[in-house]
Image (cartoon, rainbow, N blue to C red; front, top):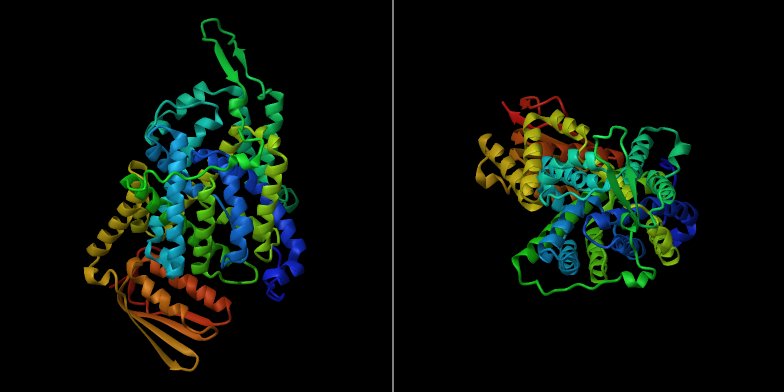
Length: 546
């Protein structure tokens, strides 16, 4: 990342474009190279046509970048929404994927209108209501589901099982039945992603790994003549071993229309009165909003200029973009963390980099659709398997365990709940488990939605925030809103002497707030924890008064 901490904060609007167009254009182009294969892969994994992901990213770049409340985030489709969208397509379509696609577009439009309203109602602090361990568990479960679904595509095999656990159980059989040429394309792509993640050479890193995966896959596709359907035999040396007859052809390549305008589809609201439709609406709205808010806040910490997004405005802007995207056949978008991180690392300064990334995508799909048709689906599946692994990597389990056994238990319960049921029910199970642990620790039901705290000013520059009773995930929202109103560059003390319980979510929030406040020229300390028992050595671990 470039060291620009001593430079003036870049201007926005047209003045920012004139001032920073070189750096933003360069970053936008590099992010476009990363986004292109990911948008295609996410769309196909979601049960949508490949171009639906491109439509979402184009709108996210060209429109949302101009009205959002963030500075260096990239808006587009995300792997975290694959599970929600695919479930909606399958449930609403009842076996007819095209019908399910159009019903889901209608659900996206309604969910997006709710996002706009939430932003206008200042619901940008929505993420504060969800326990950190539940959110991490939800994302890890999504990662596991993505890997389980895409592993078979990466090996050129269609699983017979329709259930998630059935798809996982079929993985060994898929390895035995793999189509060797398709599997070579998929495995080579996964190998490239792993190797690139281990490299430290910044010159090598300038080549985006996803585009390299696609280029290698296209090269192998030409060698294996994937454009023409044909068969080939593998004859083992031993006569008693069975022969293997494999089919190869265009069905293993991405299929897109020659004309970009032919990619547009329109929503069907025929099921708007059904329970399944509204379950899809709530799932899309909740998961999309939560992911977008968490990602935007995370990207703010990467911004070398230390700017902070207006999360309420950002939520409304994403909702507006999603409304248009759903109305013409696109996926819902969020503030995407991986592409946004690459945007920062490539020197982006303003939201114009997001605009340029969308413009490059539009130009590419309009002018070179035949190139997209040459991309093997196995290469895109490899990208998604790697993305799923990152969400559910062993380090995520170890990181959660380091915060405390109770936190790890909620994390695992949420994962199992999501895998056994669905996303909404799994998250509800995780929250219920967290609530039961707090009740066991003595938190009264009346305190679950109300934190006892008092803010008093001792002099012009010093504020004391005294917290008593239970400070937990479900009653944090009031304190978070109060802190947002405090002036900058003052001295703030969190006094937790009288607090009986401070859970992980609140401890993490206080530490993050203190770090951000100090970074902006103020002073912030957490005091009064000497008489509390800590459940682990982690600084964000829960505290219980002895």
